[in-house]
Length: 384
Image 1 (cartoon, rainbow, N blue to C red):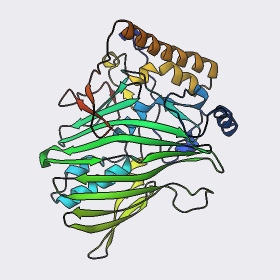
Image 2 (cartoon, rainbow, N blue to C red; image 1 turned 135 degrees about the horizontal axis):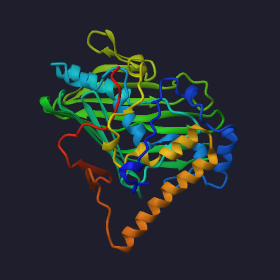
Image 3 (cartoon, rainbow, N blue to C red; image 1 turned 90 degrees about the horizontal axis):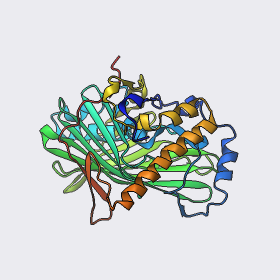
């Protein structure tokens, strides 16, 4: 698939998930619970699922790279550019916290995106924001993102690795890696991590974001600690899609705001001095009016483009032609194995096209983009 010529490239784009993503997933196979339990019957609790291969019955018609990108370029309101607008550093920090919350997207139980193949890319523009992703490692799977907005002096750099483990009644996915948001004209860099993913099969099926997120800016001395809460074990708790936390100065440590709400509704902060409440995040702004990206320049689409690599698989899944989907997915994966064998026989090491990759002393992957600015993409999000 990665070796296709320009004339053979076909792109299949699917709509982003709205807040009602569960009800819109009309491509899922029937009897998913029974199928999932059957799929994991020979998997031991505690097993690492990094190399676990899913049949197309359990796939979304899109790659992980597309899902990561949609977190950034698919929003009803441009919450990212807002981060650089306030003159007050505390107001900028509150905007960054709101943007971080906006990246939580509703997920569909029982299906997962494709695991990207080595060298796969995804390049999309939304207004003045240009976003480029690349799968820079296959074993372990590491994805990198670089996004720039020259008009608003914003740069994003991500490097992340998902590690999934089967725990009998659930799959816990730890999202490792660092996310950096740079407000270039302010000379500020905000570092943060991602919440983790919890997929529960029993007693009630569901999928949630969970865990702790820390956001900090050394230049302003401000930090935030957020806690994402999943639904309770029996599904009766009120913490479903909740986010709670605090925003404080690091030196001396002084809590400025207490944060509370739900990432699929609204999030408020309470000023610890005045006691006043204010809304800093409204999910309706983020999820309303989401538009499916379109191809603006087919000749500019690379053969490594995610929506081209998986086009035949995605088409078959949306038609629920599972035999065709299986055949097409096997072809993509076999091509990956072929490329790996050829490189090994020639003694070559894979070199990412758009990033340099290193392993830090603290045990995490780090990546650096090779370009200062991401160029405009041949795939764009329509403005109207």
